[in-house]
Length: 174
Image: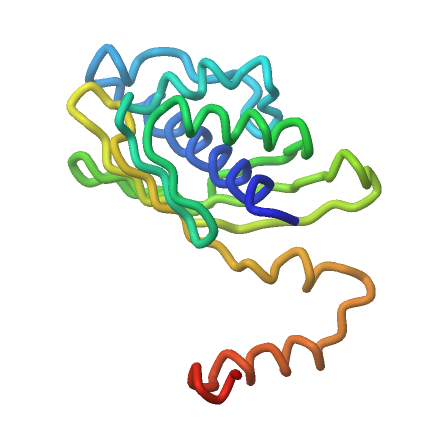
């Protein structure tokens, strides 16, 4: 799994979270606009609508990538959608306080090059919205080892070795 695939997962989680909230709290015209109907099955055809929920100068970041600007965010996710299919996106919980929105969500990702391989993710998205409901800043958090841990050949011993390595100082890692 690469960064593009992970970013798509995060995107879908946010869309699901906003759909969940805007159906109850459509306070501004921006928030009452329809979200993509096929949450969890967003496709390249939906990417323009998705990008419309970002402010033109929005910031997006996760552990692997940082992007600035709606067009860069749109291009990044459009590229992801050529490589993966997302299914079963579900909001686990969400909290909104003022202009801040936090969403815990999960989704299944299928790799188009390996259709038999599917990975289940849980992610957290933290968003700051402008007064019109556009995303100004989005930070996503996820476990980057998820696809490896779910692989049939993955050994718990490898996970243990990796965690031991992470506990070393940078000098010890070299």
